[in-house]
Length: 315
Image 1 (spheres, one colour):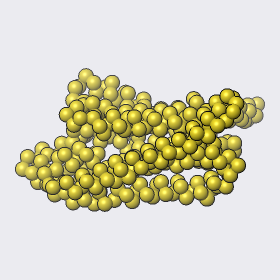
Image 2: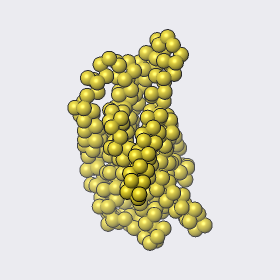
Image 3: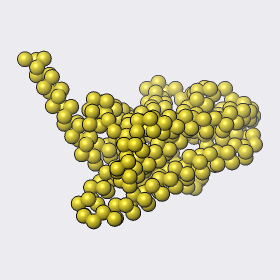
Image 4: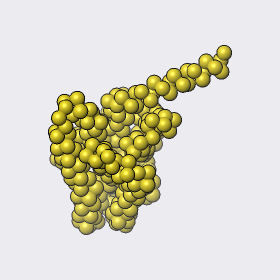
């Protein structure tokens, strides 16, 4: 551990808990959530690729969300699994910076992508006659490209400033992965400009703005649904966006709890980070599959197809 307040070549991750009796349960819990995340999101990707009835803008964005969930869970949880197996908690400075960049990129991307999905639901419910034109293939490709590229580029200035910090009071990160806030808290350099930039970009640009746009989309959606005279029509319209509403509510609730938690409750903060990086990516595909008749129907069709194919090969 560095006590002389100098630059560091590596960091040491403390992990979720120091209690030895909790290491095995934590490892098994994280492994279980990661495997479910991997399996369920890969299932969504495979279903959308194989089933032509799912070749719609909504499921195109859902595939992007699944890729995000797999990537986010992998980049944050892999160190917990590796540490338990090898006992190696050290991460090089460069590796730590790469992890911060990728995690920040994916986190910002997910909120913007959910905003694009809310726009898709707005077009489907409020502009049904023009839906195919509004959400054409080129428009969907542009929105997806914008989500990935914008979130990748907007974090770049903050990352450049982070890598230029030359003074650290310690090299022990009290977290289970390299995140930008714990690293800044270790620095003895002037980080006021960096913190202002992170607040401007992270909170206002990548969190509040997507939330505002999503909220406005659903104001129009709800207003349109309430104009539908039949109760069956209203129920059907609400059902088409129920999965997205659930996922959006889950994301912003956990995000709000995570970033508005008092700084003194560090253990609770780490638990919220675990929920955000492990539980949310696991729940996203489950919400869309359990609450979506189209996904369940596609799963049944593909199951029948492969069973028929298996029987024809076997017999």
